[in-house]
Amino acid sequence: MAGKTNALQKPVNLSGQLENVVGKGPMTRAQVTSKVWEYIKANDLQDSNDKRQINPDDKLGAVIGKEQISMFKMTAAVSKHLT
Image 1 (spheres, rainbow, N blue to C red):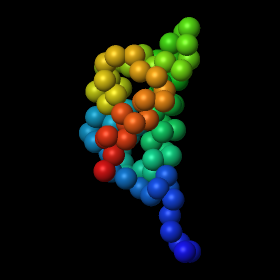
Image 2: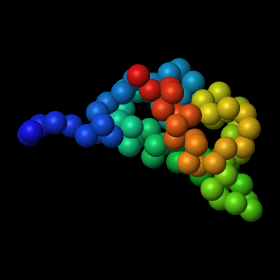
Image 3: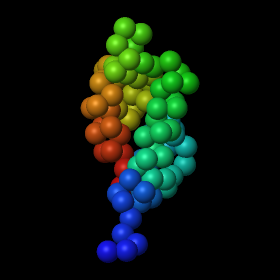
């Protein structure tokens, strides 16, 4: 089936909270993931002892919750803000 786009390449709309972190949508899921990681690294939100753990600040916490979260669970939390 030619022309079928991969789900990661299809632009999605973002919630207001997520736009506060990654910028204005729509953007692809791949772009969202990349921009969330840019934000985490720019704001030094990875746990110093275990880089797989994310310590959200207030802005990111509005998207993924205030508690420390593993990078694996973070993707599922972010996806709840995509439509």
